Image (cartoon, rainbow, N blue to C red; front, top):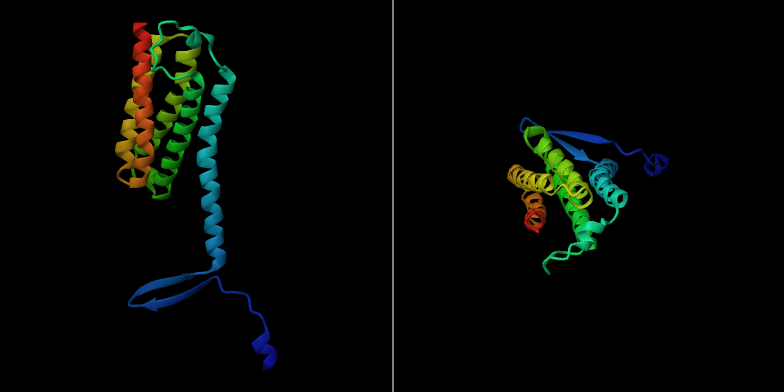
Length: 189
C-alpha cells in the first residue's frame, strides 16, 4: 500500500471533464512548454527571414558613393548609416507585427494580409539597390510610393486582428513617408 502511494506515475496529458455539454481540457506543463517552444520557433523564423534579407541587401550593395557625393543635399538628409539602421529596424518591426497577425490567425482569415506583407518585404528590399546604387531615381520614387501604399494597406489589414501589430506598423509608415520625401527631393536635385 505504501509502495503504491510513493510510486510516481506519469502525468496524464489531458484530463477530460464534462460540464454542461461542453468539454474542458486541462493543459499540463509539458503542453505549455511545447506550445511555448513552437511559438518561439515561429517568432524566430518570422523575424529572421526578412531581417536576414535586409541585412544581405545592405552588405551586398554596401555604401554607394553617389549618395555621399551629392553636394546640394539638404541638411535634413540622413546619413547612410542611419538609412541602413532604420531599414533594419523597420524590417524587424514589420516582421514582429506580421507575427502577431499570424498568431491571431489573420493570414488564414484575411486573404489580403499575407500578399500585402510579402509585397511590403519585396519593395523594401528592392528600394535600396534601385535608389542608392543604380541611380534609378524615377523608378526608385515609384517603388517608394508603392512601398508606402503597401505599408498603409498592411496597417489597415493588420488592424482587424491585432492592435499592437498596428502600433508596430506606425513607425514603419513614418519611415517610409520620410524615404518617399527624400526620394522626391533627389528627383529635384
